[in-house]
Structure formats: C-alpha cells, structure tokens
Length: 207
Image 1 (cartoon, rainbow, N blue to C red):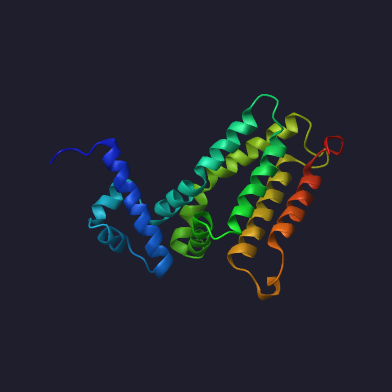
Image 2 (cartoon, rainbow, N blue to C red):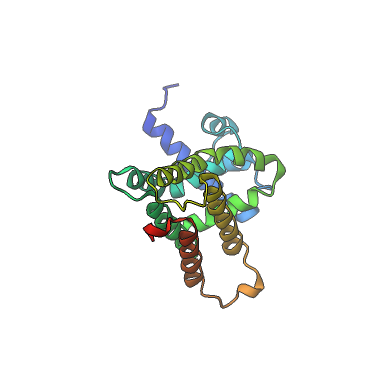
C-alpha cells in the first residue's frame, strides 16, 4: 500500500476531528467511543491511533484548532518590540470571551471541553495538555513584571492565579449559565470584569 502524503494524512486528521466534534456534541464526550468516530469516517480505530493517543488528545486538538491561530497572534503581539504584554493579554482575554458568548465553533468546543473535564479518565490528561497555554500566560506576566507594568504588590504567580480564576469563572458562567443570569448583558459584564482585573494587576503609574 502506498504511503500517505503529508497532505493526505492531514486531511484524514481533520476528517476525524470533524466527526469527533459532531459525535461529541450529539452523544456527549463520555458516551462517544473512538470506534464510533472511526466508523463515521469509514475508517478503523487504527486510523485514530495513528493521529491521536486517546479521546483527550482529540479534544485538545479540537481546542487547538479553534484557538491556535488566535494564540499565535497573541504570542507574536506580546513578543513584538515595545509591546505591552499585559495589555496584549487583557485584549486577548476580552476577544476570546466575547467570542464565547456567540454561537460559534469555539463555544461548542469549550462546552465539550468543560464536559470532558468532569470525566475522571479524561480530566488528568486534559490538565496536562493545558501546560503550554499556562506557560504562555506566565511568560507574558513575567515580561510585564520585568517591564515594571505589573502592580508592585502583586507577584507573577498571584497575577497568574487571578487570570486563571477569572477564566475558570467565565467558563462556568458562559458554558453552564445559572437561571439568575437570564437577561444579564454578558458583553457588558465581561468588559467590567476584565477591566477590573486589569486595574488589579497593572502598576498604578501604568494605568
């Protein structure tokens, strides 16, 4: 059998991810099997294992497919000469969370990701895969600290925890809204919250 070209292999990978997104959304992450995903593409489970280690890896790939271009743009903007890393981080947070309030592919993937985090056999693997995103955020905050833009009374680790707490809270708010949130202007709420975090972490002279 002829070996697949890189382009053909990537096409297969994207077909598997499309099928996974559809089945995860229809049946739930826990109830969807790798065999079902492969069957939906007319393939065997071996095709999946060629590209993905397990369901957690497929979920992370879906997550990366949705946000990687934005994350790459963010990192380029942060590392540009003369850039304000803290402002870039806050701007990216604002853009990301406003997108999540819309009916978008990113929102769909985030809701699946949150669902998967409740599955014990997936949560640990997903947590490990978050390390790269966490590392980028920590680097951006360290750069802000080194440039004197981080509040002098706040350490890099505390600022990182604050951003993480905000992101976790917003994920819960948007992906699992409570009844008391009905009628709330989410866009205005997001802006107010992100502005508040910005005031908390930014050095007074830089505000």
